[in-house]
Image (tube, rainbow, N blue to C red; front, top):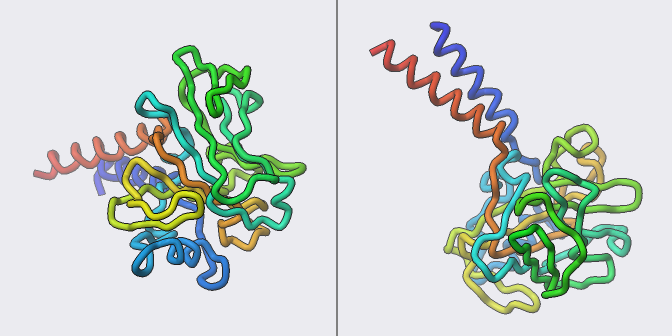
Length: 242
């Protein structure tokens, strides 16, 4: 293999490794796939909870699209210590700068509307939270006593991925508490969490599940750079071979 092709292969391998998703296990009881199937009208979900995840590194950071804000709905919380869990957003550049969206006392169907103005001020249900983000981009977090997990896996203990994200495809109709039946479109995401360190968790990734609309994921620059390097290398190798 020539040097350019080897370099491209290495780059693509590195990108693939960094983009791997959390492995969701369990197919019965309250497993994530079962819950998603049960929420789908007319049959099982078209989404496979492992094959259809947004890759890790592509689901780390997000931003609001459109001018009306983003609505987050608490779909499910099955964590054993759910009463002490919290969920919210954090500043992409400062994890200590964060805003809570849900607390353990919230129940399925609870909703919050998130708005971020041009100056980074954060509003929940129209109320200024007294927090300003450094940019309009943010990550999601799930906190429990003694540990906090982030959508950016590199910030988690051991660098483990604790969150799975899925984008609607316009195929499935969901029936969720508080929302009724609706078509799951491509501007809506389901985000599911494991609230114990992945290596010693049950790996069902269903401890907290939310539906979020009005947002879009923002790929990390490093992930895109690796992909771009790999594609450029492969293109150069092909031209040389031709």
